[in-house]
Image 1 (spheres, rainbow, N blue to C red):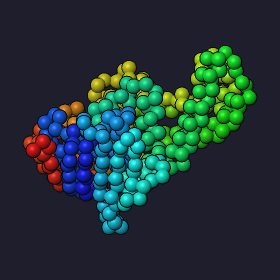
Image 2 (tube, one colour):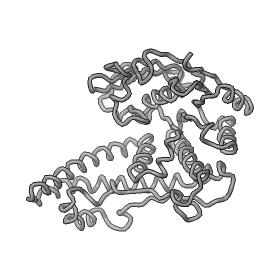
Image 3 (cartoon, rainbow, N blue to C red):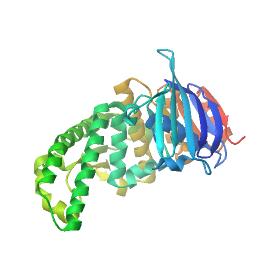
Length: 362
């Protein structure tokens, strides 16, 4: 599966634009501000129904416009079928369509056209808060596990209701104890399901991640990803019950899978505190490559790989290790952005990688 063409209207820096791509490697080159990263974000939109960079869709509308539209044509080499995926946003409403048929729920589209983005912002996975890491792993699991995505959406809705009640109790100074158990009864099985799927995913991904880290770092450092959850030590029912008074005093829910985190370690020490800059870059990139590998194993579809500004952010050894994988047909379609077209051409040619160069801003 690969993206043949894309059309953009009023999307970020683009008023109107159309591009066609090679099924292997595409170098997107141009000066800073020429729209390279925006093009990658448009491809990301076609997979995840949202921007990689912007929390709200309104920020993806070109300045002065009142809508944006993205249309991409995907080709399945096995079935020889084409699918046109469209994402439009106007007046606060977002619509996703496949071959002109609109999805009733955006979640139904997630995972059909998988994408993996490698970005300078990946350092946030290591240095950001627990919410960043939960979102990262939830996004990976959701691409191949529809049931997980639906359960997660349901859990978040119930959590929002529970927190609204707790805040209402706190503000009014009056609690209604019969209301919370009704929500808790629905949250408990969802929370247990999410916990089990996250735990199983980390266990399955761990050896793949370690292999990629060793290849990128070129050494035998022991690395690990540990899933941290209160449910490992306390059953959900008990944890909710024990925290009722704390919840009432704070106005929010203090126990549950929404408090989970993931501990990244190297040689038994937290990467965030003790890892060198090079080790941290290898760690975050290995996580992305493990995401690619695990998703491919589960869905048998090679995700599109988006590499944003890697030649400036990675050293020569890590770039070499990554491009060796690309040259071995380990990946499917790949997009690489860079400010130096000659550098991209030279590096890809050096590794004998079939590619197409698209110059932006011309």
